[in-house]
Amino acid sequence: MKMPEKTTESLNAASRNQLDGPWVPNVVVVDPRFDAYKSLAASARLGKLNLHFRSSGADAIKLSRKQPVDAWLIATDLDDMSGHDLVELLRSFNRSFNAGQEVGQADEAQAQVSQK
Image 1 (cartoon, rainbow, N blue to C red):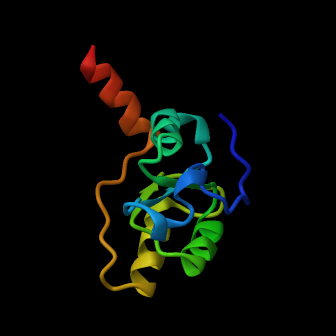
Image 2: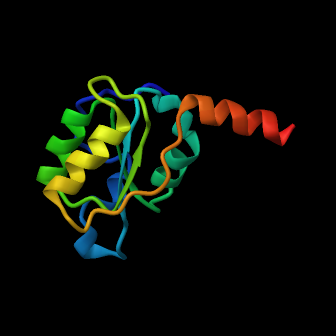
């Protein structure tokens, strides 16, 4: 699934106006490999979340200035910086920003080998 990098629309059209219904989290995926998030896209289509894709840290930061973000999924290798650098930038803008574990392609490959 290839998503346009500069789209600002959520995949979930039904929850664009959250005043009319239940709270739906805004999730931003920052990863050049959009196709790795098919299950999240399916959740967005079901109205469970608003999902936004960006392949660069700069575009992700621009989006975060336009709307609140409830959760971030950040890859380690982005188009313009490392995922770690993006996390540090987000922390500099928002001291309460919390980051989970960073996982890169090498970590994913090791996890797949471990599962076999």
